Each structure stands twice: as C-alpha cells, then as structure tokens.
Amino acid sequence: MTNDISRQTIVVLVILAVLISLLGTWTVLTEVSRVRVRGSNVASADVRLTILPPEKAQPQEPEVVSTTGMVAFRIIEPPVKG
Image (cartoon, rainbow, N blue to C red; front, side, top):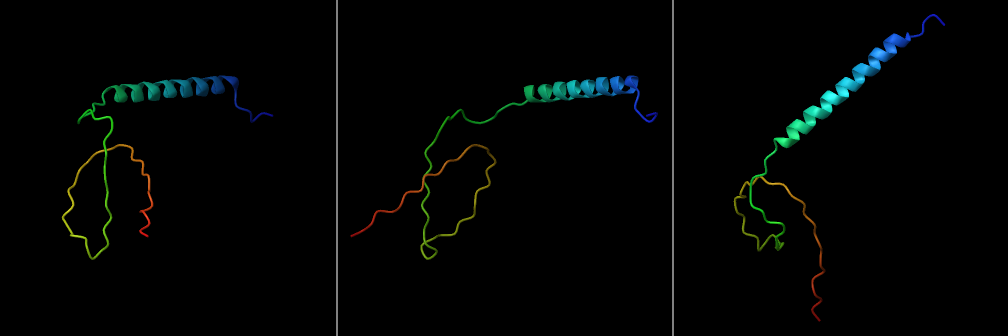
C-alpha cells in the first residue's frame, strides 16, 4: 500500500480544518454582535382581516412595508344563520 496518505499530511489537513472552522465561528459571532434591531418594542398585536367577495372589494394601492415577524392564524367558521 504505497499510495496511502502520510500521517503528517493527515495531521496538517485536520489542523487546517480546525483553523478554518474556528475562523468561521469567530466571523459569524462578530457579525451577529453587530446586528441592531430597529422599530417598536411591541411584543404582540391584534390584526383583523376581513375577506370580502370580489363584488364588494375596493381596490387600493398596497403600502410597501419592510418588516419581519411570526404570524399565526386561527380560522373560525362563520356562524350559521338559521
């Protein structure tokens, strides 16, 4: 088996991989510490959405807003009229 990689080559590759990993971790942690959050400090809010049939809808120009967050929906069946 003369085609095997020498132990010295393997050690150098492992050390190189560890150094690259440490450098990547340090870079990510440095960038995360620079993140600044802008906006209000509202923890939660109520949002109500009414879906109208097309004949009752009044088209409006949408307002462009850039934000992020988590949204959860609870869909409620309309009350049965009877």
